[in-house]
Length: 210
Image (cartoon, rainbow, N blue to C red; front, top):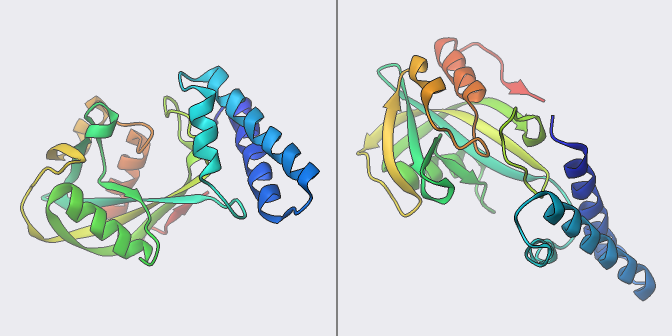
């Protein structure tokens, strides 16, 4: 589980954001702004990110605070799973995916992400898991917002391996190769990838959830 300071900072930020969304009282709003600043300082104290940058990120979030949603696609070819090196995380390996987009279903979103990052078109076969990002095992990096991760099994229907602005390399890996990869642990862990292999082997396996 993630450290207590991260849970507390995230909850303080969520309370501040929701308070600013609904409170008309200027004195209460000032207190909520102070809470938002405190949450940023807590995160800055434990990371290498300046408090001002974190607070600016928090200020972009308005309205009632709810979890963010990310999607990842697990597509297989000849028993090997499709993976990409993500430019944004030092070219480490991960399953293709990203943030869910407004006005797209989760399935549409993951199919779009796979296409954009790999050049392969897919159909989405199954929701394999809905995971609480807080429960990613170490060494997953801390994130300032509460996050759900949806993992889908996908079938490749066409296309060719094509790196993008977000990805520098594309590859297919057998299950016994996963533990030796330099993974982007903020996006996916070896445990999650092994779960995708389990779901691929057993189509009747129910979806994982936290």
